[in-house]
Amino acid sequence: MSSVSSSLPTLTPELKNKLLAQLSQRAKTSNDAQEALETRLAPWLILDQRPLLTLFAAGEEAPVDAVSITCLNDRVVGKGFNLRDITHGICGDLPLLSNIRQLPEGRIATLTLPRTYGQIYSQSGDIVRLVEQSLHIAHSLGARAVSLTGLIPSATRYGQAIRHQANQPLITTGHATTTSAVVLSLQKLLQSAGRDLADEDLSFIGLGSVGTAALSLMLTVLPHPRSLTLCDLYTRRDALETLMRYLREELHYQGELRFAPSQRTCPEEIYQATTLVGATNVPNVVDVARLRPGSLIVDDSDPHCFDVAQAIERLETQSDILFTEGGALRAPGEIQHRIYVPKALEWALQYPADDDNAHHITGCILSSLFSGKFDYPATLGMVEPQHAVTHYQALVERGYQAANLHCGFWRVPASAIAAFRRHFGAEEA
Image (cartoon, rainbow, N blue to C red):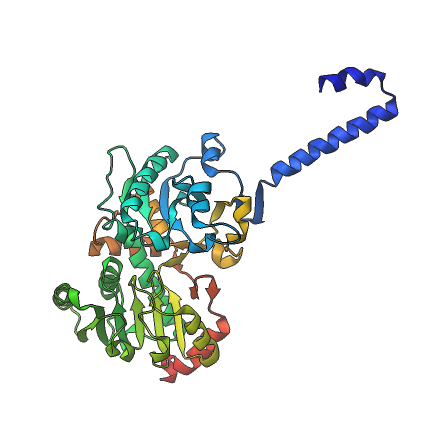
C-alpha cells in the first residue's frame, strides 16, 4: 500500500479516480464477505459461520444463564463427509457450541457432543467424559445450570455418573420439565380430537424416568382415564407392581389397572387402548397397522415407538389415527436463535423458518433455564413427583403450551385434525 501511496502524486486525475474506485470496490467486496459470515433467515433466526465460542471470547456475545447438552444428528453424515470428518475434523472431538437461544426469561446455549444418537449407548463411558468437558465450557459461559437432553440422561445413569465439581453449574436431566411437556401434549391432543381423558382407555409404553413421572403427574393434575394399561419389560414386573400400588394408594386411581409385559414388541393388550403414551427408547414397538381406528398417540420416545412414515401415510389416507410428539413446547413469544453452521454443512440443516419453529423449544432444553435462573428443582435420578408438579405449574403460569401437533419437522395439517375430530370426537361417539 505504501508504494501505491507514493505513486499517487504522479498519476493523472483520471487514473487517480480509477484507482480509488478500484480500492473502494475491493473494500466493499471485503465487507460483503464479512457480512456473508452470518445469514438472517428470519427476524428470529441467524445462521453464523463463525465459531460461537470465539464470539463469546471476543465479547460479541453476552454470558448465558444456562446450557443444554445434546448430540449430533445422524444426518450430518453424507455429501462427502464421513462420521470422523464431523466428530474429529469439525468438532475436534470436543463439545461444540452450536446454538444460542434468547428467551424473554434468559439465555440458553447448546453444546453438541461429537457423537451421534446411535453412539450414545455403545460409547456411554465416552459420553460421560464429554459431558464433564461440557461442564467446564458451561462454567466459562456463565451458566448456572446444565441440562442433559435426548438419550444422554439414560446413558449417564440419569446424570449420576457425571463427576461434578463445586464451582460448576448444577446438572439436571430436565425430566421434570419434559414430563410436564408430555402431559401438556396429551391435553392438547385430546382437545384437538374433541375427546375427554375420563372416557379414554389409556396405555403407557415404557415406565422409566419420564414415563413413570408423566403417569404420576397426569393422575395428579388431570381427570383419571377409564382404564390404565402399563407396558414394560417382564423383568421390571416387581417395579411395576410397586408403581401400581402407588397409583392406587397415593394417587387414588380407581379405574381398571393392569400390567402388560412386553418383549420385542408391544402385546395385544396395548392395541385395545384408545390413547397411547410412549416413553421408551426401543424403536417401532407399536405396529401402526394394528392400532384401532380413532387411536391417539403422544410419543416422547427416542427413537419413536412407532414407524413415523407408516403413521403419516395412515393419517393421510384413512384419517383414523392422530399423533404428536410429547416433549416439545410452544413458547409465548418468539425465541431468538444464533446457530453455528459451517459453510460445508449448510446442506445438513433442517430448520424451517416458520412460526412453529419460532416458538419451539423442548422441555429438556428449557429445564436448564428453569433450574439455572429461577431455582426450580433440578433432577438427578428419578423425578420427584412434587417437582414435576412444580415445573408443570411454572410452564402454565409463564404461558407455555404444548407444541402444535407434529412429528419431527412434519406438521399435522389442520384439515387432517378436523377430519379426525368429525369421525372420532366425543360428540360423534
